[in-house]
Image 1: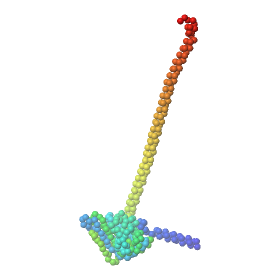
Image 2 (image 1 turned 60 degrees about the vertical axis):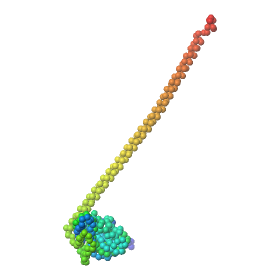
Image 3 (image 1 turned 120 degrees about the vertical axis):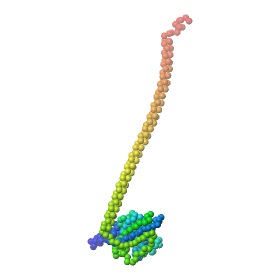
Length: 337
């Protein structure tokens, strides 16, 4: 029984790990994998002088697909013009109070934060290289139950160029949910619609949709371009990392120099304070010593005066004593006055 329970636990863990590996989320960035047949969307733009906008939408096929919680729209795309407004998908929807069209479903972006609207710029990702786009439709719960009526391919080029051509390639257009493919819109030749493709909206554009099949040379060329772009991105990332490290080293050196300068300044200030204190102490000491010397001088002068007086007194007293002893009075000696 214990062995059976352990076996079941291992099976459950393996199943969970497998689901984690094969689940695609909008936070992931899986690589495009074009192969077999693809959709080629060719648009010739010809605008009058001063016009910046053009647009085109073509209905590729009807869908009638109701979105469920966890649904994602995925597709591979690449185009040959470095402008905004290329590489998007669209379609009519029902059941969404905010909008009747796929491109304006609120709060929906791809894994790199690019919104659905056809005017947004995918050139950073899909210009000259295949890009696998993942759109989490029900990231906004309001879209659960919305019906995607038809699938459209469109463009809304915003460019100063008045006359040019853009070719956009699409492949592997599917709706998935937790790794399970719920609906294939286009993946290979069998998915090309039998009904007529309708050009429904157009301004300053002449557009066509056609199906083509990749040659091995084309796929190899795409792979080489992708590898070159990845190498370039890696080189840029390494250069940025080196520049960041250099800037951080410079900032650290500046911080260390600031600490040294602060320490030197503090030492200088302390030395100045100590010198001032010592000078003040010496001044105070000089004043006290000078006062003492003056006092001693005064005392000496005063003392000298006293000694002089005492000497004078002593001389007078001595003289009197001598007179009294050596010169007797005349009367006492019988002298006649």
